[in-house]
Image (cartoon, rainbow, N blue to C red; front, side, top):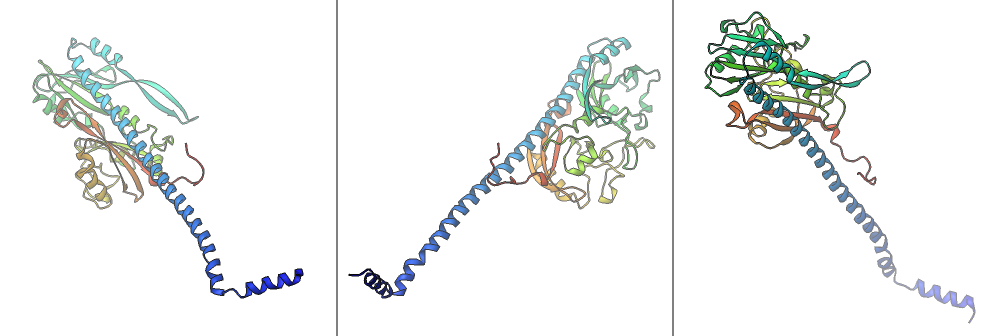
Amino acid sequence: MSVDLQIGKSNQRFSNLNPWALILFVFPIPILIVGLFFYYWSTARADYKRVTSQFIQRQNQVLAHDAMEVAREVSHLLEEAAHDVQTLSLIPTTPANFTKFYISRVGQLTQLDPRDDSVNIIPLPLYNEIIFLNLHGDEQLRLKNGQQESQLRRFNQCSGINLCDAELIKKAISLSEGEIYFGRLIRWYSKEKENEKNEGSYLPVVYRAADGFFLLGLDYRYLKELLTQPTFPYERKQNLLQSYQNGNYIYIVDSEMDFIAHPKFWNVSGFSPLTGFRVESMQIDADEGEHPINIRSYRGERLKTYFDRLLNRSFLQRSVDVFQASNLGGSNRVLSVAPILMQKGQFRTTGIFGYVILGCSVDYFEAPKEQYVPYY
């Protein structure tokens, strides 16, 4: 049989095939190929979503850990102050002994040199106020920045104008022997359009002795310095206000719900240098820049949801809380809240002095940019 005849018969048999059988045979092939492609694509996508979720969760954990570290530093400063004020009461009350005590209590402060962006560590005494008062609240000996004051204040001369808190002195007089009490932050209040008045600002702790009471004022610069600590996403906070605008910031709240350290210094509680009374807290959003912020007293709209979350959840638990909220400018932030643990003075019952709030822009909480590039 010739080759041409064989080919002709083969073509005839192929043409005699049922076209529907041919369609049923050929049609599943592209469907199978598309199905396999979709399967592998969906599997890879699910794995990527899982990796993305774990990546963002890890970022939250880092943010929470940073807040706890700053809270521990605040606790350490307060615990040290409580120990030191008791120690001070055990030595004879003389100018020489107070001076030796002042010199012996020196810590380290981190400062950024704006000329070359270098970071310097400088020594700084912990306490810019060391005072002994009699049982009536009159000063008997006072060192301000290590220098003995010749003009001692009587109780009726105590005013916020001279950075003396009369309410604290009243509380100190009522203490029982051996009791410790932490006062509210003592500083002059500065409005947004003014220069910050930090000179002489301090956080006081009082100890009641048998013949009077001792007061140590923790230099406010130690609290302010904590706001510059490197935290996620670990951009250097050369300018606190600029870092705040970028979404990278820290601030501290005490048990009275006052801001006691904040990148915007006009949000921090303080005395009016004109009246000597504490400046009333911000009530509505329009008060920003003219009044400090107290979370409990706030009656505005822009921070209401955020502050309600703090008061009704974050501040009611002893663990870290991480959530998302907007600030006064309307920018979204991921926030980590950690309690400042304290077992001294009036905080022996609650065990909490206040809270550290650490913020980060949601822009930093992104999924990995490349799906197939490994992250280590």
